[in-house]
Length: 257
Length: 310
Image (cartoon, rainbow over all chains, first blue to last red; front, side, top):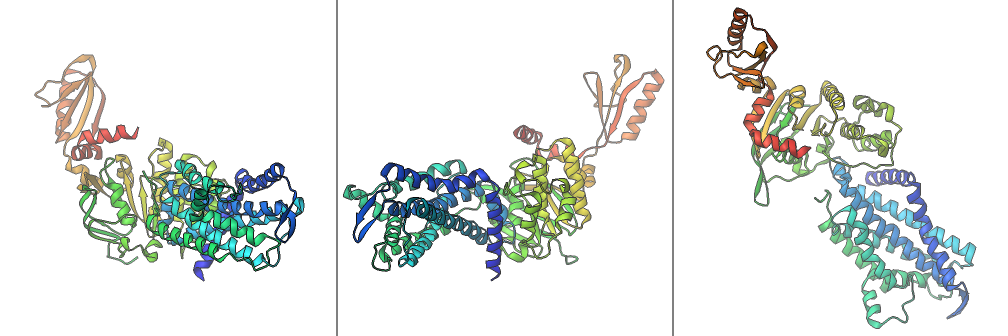
């Protein structure tokens, strides 16, 4: 209970600091919306035929951008800010206080997940208001569970990757190199139906495609079942656990010199 | 704090980094309420020693007890009683000074009031400033404030004034003196001799991973027996060598190393008075910690350290 209170306190301070940097906060929230707008401009928001009926194209853009939002908020943001904190000696300072170091990291991650959640809400609301996106009801639990597992998985991987980043200056390059190419082959920016088999096999190894596909299914208004993609969720969970294990082995608290 | 037991007790401390012995057998004892300075050039093993005592690093060998704890065990009860001011550390730039202190004091069971911490470090006027807007010296004060926030019994100050201008150093020294008045035990590392001399009750000089001398500043300086007499004789007249053997004249200034300064000075003044010579810029200097230090760590190392810092 006391641990929980400590985490909440950390989140509170993280949040206060986050909103004090308005430029960073603004672009964090505008970034996914820009993609939603660009997708609509380029691909059009036509009615498209899918199994079970017709829906606005945006109905399929929204889960893709939801995946992008969660990955950016959790993986990219956690990896970059934690590396920066390590380089600046913030982590080392924390280790010299009675605050358990995992509580500090938990505070950082919970805050990132909250930001990710807020992004998803904004993207879905924006899609519903401006692009006539239908928000599913019967598959909503599956959508939320997928988001929760995805947030946990990508936060863990964000922590794990810091063990492979030598310094804060290298963080954007390493983080983007590990995530952007995968996004392109994982049904986020472009549909992978026409991709060569080896590309889609490769994408199946990593968690991003599982995440975006699971979100697609659970956001599909014509989905007749509950929308749980159990095999995909299991793959994400496995990646999350691997991330935690790697983080435990490779994570560093002190600046690397 | 328990009376009698030392705040820090170290026996035979060793730390080896990849075959290189950074700390090569150090013994230390720091009493409660004492300001103890570890003095030495860069690379002497000061920071390694302090980081072992703080619990940041594991030792290769030796016994260490800090406030009755083994710092290596990383216990919360230990962390609650110490305050650490590291050489370089960051804080969240977008919080204010008061918020930062509030955040950190929340980690401790019996913290100091924010206002008191601000007053001790002299940041009361900046309490509502964002951390990123602070000057270098003010950031260093905030570092000390964070170390102090939990009301620690023992405070580690690792080179607290490196990079300060002279006025800022004076202020920092006054701040450290006021910490001593609060009854804190302070372990200070520095490569400034005057800083150790000004602040420390006891000093250990460390070179190449070993303690080469230890004592109060006056004990250490009394090891060096010769005082220095300097003057300039008007009219370019030279002091006869028989009056003060071993005197040197450089650029018109005569320097005499005197083990019995009263007698030597008398002889010189007698000569000057008899001959009607005027002694300009006459000074008598006690041996300084600097003289002792340079002898112990070797002038070359000390100068290298100076250059390194520039």
